[in-house]
Figure 1 (cartoon, helix red, strand yellow):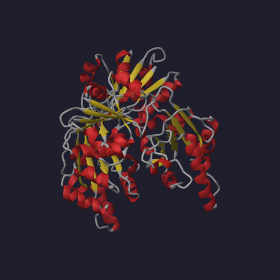
Figure 2 (cartoon, helix red, strand yellow):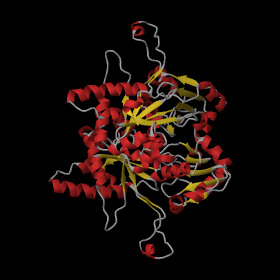
Figure 3 (cartoon, helix red, strand yellow):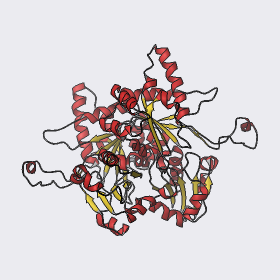
Figure 4 (cartoon, helix red, strand yellow):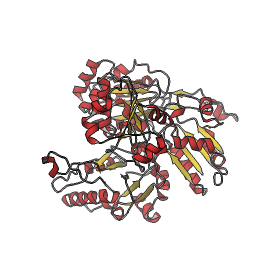
Amino acid sequence: MFYIIGLGLGDAKDITVKGLEIVRKAERVYLEAYTSILTVGKEILEQYYGRSLIIADRDLVEQGADAILQDADTKDVALLVVGDPFGATTHTDLALRAKEAGITCKIIHNASIMNAIGCCGLQLYNFGETVSIPYWTDSWQPDSFYDKIIGNRKRGLHTLCLLDIRVKEPTLESLMKKKKEYQPPRFMSVCEAVEQLLEIINRKEAEAGDQGQMASSLCVGVARVGAEDQRIVACSLQEMKEVELGPPLHSLVIAGCLHPLEVEFLTQFARSKDALLEIAQTL
Amino acid sequence: MFYIIGLGLGDAKDITVKGLEIVRKAERVYLEAYTSILTVGKEILEQYYGRSLIIADRDLVEQGADAILQDADTKDVALLVVGDPFGATTHTDLALRAKEAGITCKIIHNASIMNAIGCCGLQLYNFGETVSIPYWTDSWQPDSFYDKIIGNRKRGLHTLCLLDIRVKEPTLESLMKKKKEYQPPRFMSVCEAVEQLLEIINRKEAEAGDQGQMASSLCVGVARVGAEDQRIVACSLQEMKEVELGPPLHSLVIAGCLHPLEVEFLTQFARSKDALLEIAQTL
């Protein structure tokens, strides 16, 4: 049997009881370590589970499916992923590969940022399409996520923005060489995301001859959701540029229309309560 | 401390290790039993946790917040909810009441249908706004969810439809009496939801002089996601009227544009693989 087990979002104890039992009895257990991270590393997980884990990096997950699935028809093999198993396309793909090889694949669900973002008080059924904000490079500065945010806002909906994660990215120079060299891991902060977003907003609003209303709109920055040191801050986009939320992972929500209960809940995370109430009135 | 603990979607072992530790040591533990259900009941949970639970029905959660929160400033009190704590507005409200009473509130996240629906192979970032489909009565037949589904589809997005749950609903007659009497619990099936949806579609398309394309569009019915006997079926809306998925809970997805990987994954759940591939080509 091949298991894909969600680890949730915080630390070692956010695994489900069902997941933990499988981890403890499986023949091999892989830890997927490039689409997301927990607040604890491999060693702490190994200590807690009382067994060794095999790191499944990008190369292994995307090109080594056969190695991961080896003997899974007769033995129990598990892949641990941060959040929920179907948060990333690559895990869906692995489940399909298993099926094609005649191996039964079982999913152990857990929290992901897609539902845990409800912790900021914005109701999940008021969210539109989720967007991803990628790191810009000198030559690649996509801005299609902006149109999706605007589209959601027009319908009064909030937008969850997933922020870029770069783990085990080969350096541009090493792509030409035989031996790959990797960039240091990077996790986009709320600050960085807001900075890119404001750059797009300024450009688009200048093009349209707009008054620059978007920069004063309400957003919510969250960091390490589900962990002991989780942080949530609500303020305008312009202000969020100055907000430092600490270690990864970060996510950002651009608010749409607010229900009174949402406003009430958000005020506990407001950078300035008065400013938040003022913005909320304009939404 | 007041804990709101997500139980996930399947059975007793879908609680997280962190959640279980709190349940075992808390002074009082309430089980919220009207916004959703697990595939196992109170007795099995009590047996597994090795402790007694207090049922928190609608009246208690919505009007008895003080009773639930009593002594939570000095003792540990937990409320167990199916799925993730912030899936329902009523839990957000309870978290606020705790804060107002000066009680620290801690959330233990878990999977909810909002992210676990990824198990059908449709990617979460391709979903638009989630809708709720309520049971119609003779005098109340709302159809605003239809416009949201159409709005999502126009943007190529899938729609997750949450289906109505009626637990401990007072009978109309008893509302006049002193002693409330309750209707038997009802959980909307995928069949029932599709039937209502097709009624709206027929009416709206007749009004617009349309060719009736919507009835042949692709949908996915899911039942008991995360449980051992989980079921997933993909077919046209018209066909889904005949699909019996067994005991609750059920949910429905109306597909938008499909990525090739989504089509490939969905085929394993297709009522007819050829029919599914044909529909997918038109999307």
